[in-house]
Length: 504
Ligand SMILES: *[C@@H]1O[C@H](CO)[C@@H](O)[C@H](O)[C@H]1NC(C)=O
Ligand SMILES: *[C@@H]1O[C@H](CO)[C@@H](O)[C@H](O)[C@H]1NC(C)=O
Image (tube, rainbow, N blue to C red; front, side, top):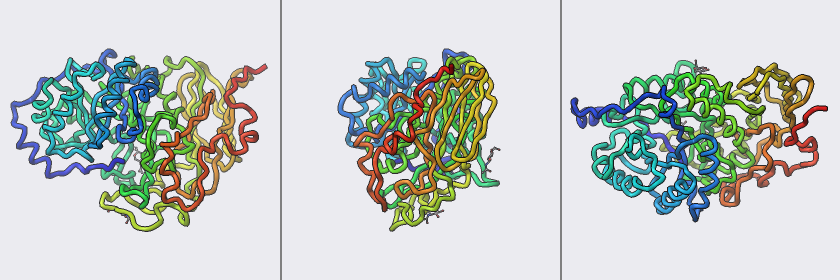
């Protein structure tokens, strides 16, 4: 749904003219070392939930996010006819569930000439009970938006705001804002694509650029697990690329604990089309065409994995280890090795597609070389144990320490089997519901991740009918729906992965 807007150098001049020296706002309390100041946000796409009809339709998301330690949803909005209705419902549900929310204006749809309209939209919601306030100011954020007239937003808002947009160092006017969100949660080439040798901007370098530009104002550091999008000519917003992801969800949380920013924003809760969701597949939403690579690809294990990291971050601890209270194994992998050739059936190979965004590529997603053919495993352990992983014909065991540890083994076609043993007893074991295959599922290149965990989820997480509505659009081959655990379930699942075997 989202196109990235290049920070325009031409904006810089306008910004310098618009912000005379001496108009510096008061610097906020930036004490990120004080645990009480630390908050975790999660980016939530309103554009994909037009099928929600009541506040109750938001309750499960609010409750789940709150239980994870997320303090507020950043409600990403465009200018759809249903935006106000859905904002009303989200604010109402948040209030009913003790959650906070704030609006994040998406400048793919808003333009930087709309400062007053944005301020007016802020005014509509700023006094609702669920509005997140910092220093008693209503929090307002954005995706992109360098160059918008912040003074117009402030005066139209009719209330004090804490404006922390996704301005870019070198483009946006950092004197005019109270904090900033960095969206780039993935190593990149500085031009919104995967890095290449010699063109490599790491997430940590992004952190440093923001921290420098903010000069002590609060930083909203991004945390994301994945990025893969694969829209072909079947939609008007064709785009097809990955950012290197692999062990990112683990590595980035470690980095966040070290950095200790004032705020963290998880990217995202429910942007299924870009594969960085941590919400269940069953969270009510419509289908922007992403179901082709989202069906049967739950990410709930990432949600679980972040739980102790969020707790550690909020306690201003640089180690997650003392926040792990139960033994868990989180694992993930792409469903096919990258050399499997899907050119003859892939959606991006056919017909014409609009490439005015520069984001459309044919065939394997741009940047695919940066992904490794591996199965990734994170162990969250209360004391040391042995991890065994069987990926098709590959088999390896690891001595895992107490706390959080990450491992990987080369991807093998076939079943994916995991176990954790301690003192000769198997404490966790199971076979993934998703095999790795060397065929093209639904005919396409699917570089999304399947995420599983042990103990296994008690129920299989599935896309609902609205989330599957565009599944077949553009496909060349039949694509059976919701196959997880359904294909020869007897064979796949006889050893009941959800059972905790307590040894003898
Ligand atoms: C980019 O730099 C990071 C950090 O040095 C490194 O881990 C990664 O492999 C590099 N990526 C590419 C494509 O060069
Ligand atoms: C789309 O535009 C980008 C940027 O100009 C270019 O690199 C890419 O090759 C284009 N895609 C196609 C399919 O021509």
